Every structure is written in structure tokens, then in C-alpha cells.
Image 1 (tube, rainbow over the protein chains, first blue to last red):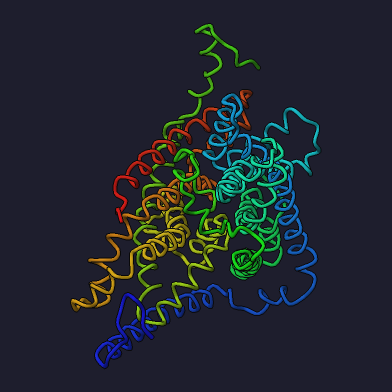
Image 2 (cartoon, chains in turn cyan, orange; image 1 turned 135 degrees about the vertical axis):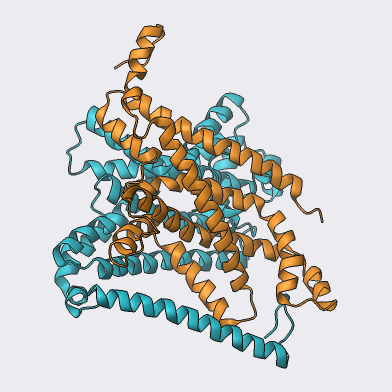
Length: 302
Length: 237
């Protein structure tokens, strides 16, 4: 086993690695032992606290409805944010200054603001200005906040996706006499959407994670919110946290794996131009390359 | 409610409510946001660098630990982590971060949670930076007899850090925005004050605009400065 950073270990290095491994294991074991001991002392290990999760009642009453709401809010946000983001992303690349500049300002503004602020504002706005019933309001507020934020993040994804296409595509379209609108809708956008798919799926992970914010701050009954109701009923703080965290990890890990599978597949595909926008590209989305500002609200992928 | 106010006295009435909030005041709340950002930023930079070192180290166990940590933490909502620091770590495990005062305790717990979460992203940024350092650099370092930690400390990491200022700036800006999640455990920072104000005052739009402006002021200069720095310090190859 060798890497660029170190040679294949010889006898001394092997000995040192074993010593380091042992020290590391001891430290980890000490930590785990402390966790186990404290949980035992606080009676968090008792089977009665974990048992609900093996029965259907806890799942059907609390966890499944919570997860359903999480997925519902995430799906709605993505479905609404995507066309909105595409519109703003394209508007930002317009040849007309009066379209480009306002679109840029809107995108940079909403990327700079924490999504929680948008949710709180939307919630209060709906309370005062609309007749949305109070039991549905949290969903509306969460989706509104997520749409405003993610549309502006996706606008940048769309823009980067279109700019990642080879220049020959635009040139060829112009050469056969297509107009700007035709070039965009028939040549660039279809290819860009394919190139963006992995980045879009990765953004879905961010959306799923952000729904939890609505659960705590504005009472949207998603998974994390259901956890507190569940824990109040069964009195199992740690077990409920563990189970909810595992559900989130499994869900998001599946999405992340799907995104990287998609990315690999698209990179291999012979029919495309080979332009792919993956999760990594989004984190490093170079503003200089996409002609944007190093703006306010980069970091949409966290 | 009208925000189209030009007369000085009328303007005073519109902004009047701000003086009702003293614990914390508007600036005080944003100061807490800044403190949260800076403290957890430093914490996540240290822990994230250690994690990145583990992920490229010759010890398989450390590599495994780094990978598992990053993949677990990245996929859990920050809200779950922050809430857990209060309801789990503090209430069950008795980790009070050296303070019996709830306010201080929750602030420190929030810093811990934010740092633990952000470190996963710092680690990935640094690891991608290590990948940008040409192979020849590490090979030359090994050729003159440097061992793993020397290669990493003296040759690779200094170049990697210069390459990842841009991505790390992204992480810092995201962290600034993420500090609002600390409101979930009652840390008196900007988002919590906004929630209180917006629920009790009539000036919904004005309050929203004031807090939004506050965050633009915090993130815009950070982004511009670090963007300039990353271009200046980029290793020309």
C-alpha cells in the first residue's frame, strides 16, 4: 500500500503505524466506553426505550408522517425552485443590461441571507397577509424559504452548466441561423440540464437537511419535529436522536451516492459533450470562470 | 403600516421599536453571530485540518475514521446536531462546557456543534486542495528523505492551503449563515432576535430588511476579501 505522500512502509514505518493504530484505538475505545457508561448510568440503554422502534406504532404515528412531510417539503421546494432558478440563471446571462443586472442583484441577495431568516419572514408574512390556515402555514413558510434560497443557488448552477458547454455548441447554432432564444431552448438548455443533474441531486441533500430547521423554528411537523413528540411520549431522548439521525444519513447518503453514480455515468457517456457539473464542482464553483462576483452567498452546498 | 417615511419624526416612530430591545440589542445580537462564526470557524479549521491529515495518512484506521466521520456528519442536518448538543450532550451526558450559566453553556455548545459540523466540509476542501498539488512535489519531498508528516507539513499543506482559500471562503460564508441555527437552542443571536421582533412588532418588512441587510454586510466583505486573497495567493503553475 503506497501513496504519493508516503513510501511503502518498511519495518520501522510498519512498527510506527502499528503503535499509532493502537494509540488511536485506545483513544476511540475510551470515548466509546465513556459514551456507553454515561448512557448506562442515565438509563438510556434500557430496552424499553429502544423497543418502540421495533414496533410499528412509533413508526406509523411519528416517524413515517414526519419523514413524509420532510420529503414533501423537499420535493415541492425543488420542483418550484428549479424553473425559477433556470429563469434567473438565464436572465443573468442576458445580453441586455436591464435584465442581467436586476437578476444578478436578486440572486446575490437571496444567496446572502440565511434560509432561516427567509422562513421566519415568510411565516410571519403569511400570518398577517394571507388566510392560509394555521396548520398548513408552516409547510408554506418552509417551502417559500427554501424556494427563495435554492432558486438563487440553482440559478448559479444553471449558469455554470450552460457555461461549461463547449463554445462550439453556440457557434454551430449561430452558424445554422438559430436565434438567441432558439439556441438557448433547443441547444444549450437541454445539454446543460443533463450536465447539471448531479449538482441538482446534491442540492436536494441540502434541501432535505434544511427542512429540519422549519421543524424546530416554526413548528413544521417534519422528521425532527416528530422526534420531539415521540421522545416526549416514550421518554427516549438518545434513542430517538440516534434513529432520526440514521434515517437522515441513509436518505442523504443514498442521494449523494446517486449523484456521484450519475456524474460518473454522464462522464462516460459518449453521446454528450462531456460537460458535467458534479457536487465537487459546485463547492469549487469558480466565480472567475462563470463571470460572477465572489459573492455574498457562495457556499450554497453546505 | 407604511415604510414610505421621509419626515424625520415619522422615521423615528417607525424605527422606535428598536430601542425596546436591549437584551440583546440589534447590534448585540449580531455581535453574538460574529462571535459564533469566528470561534467555530477557528475550531472547524483546526479539527478539519486534522481530519484531512487523517484521511491521507498511512494508518488505515485513521483513514477509515476520517471517512466515516465526514460521511456521517455531512449527511446529518446541522439542526439535528445543534439540538443534540443541548438535549443530548448537555442534558444526558452532562457536558456543560465548564459553565453552569445556561446562556454561556448554550453558546459554547452551539460553537461545539457548528465546529463539529463545519469541520467535515473544511476537511473535504483541504483534501481537494491536497489533490491540486502536483505529484512531483510530494515525490521530490520523499526523494530527499522527508517522512509523511514532514512532507505534509512542509511541502504539501502550505501549497494546498493557498489553493483552497476560495473553497474555504465558501465554507466560512456558509458558516456565517449557519450560525442562525443556534437559535434552535436559544442562543441569543440575530435570527432569534428577528423571530422575537417579527412576531411582536408591526413592521414585518422593515424588520426582515434590517436583518437581511445585517447578513449581507457580514458576508459580502468576507467574500470579496477572501476572493481577492485567493487570487493573490494562488500558486502560479
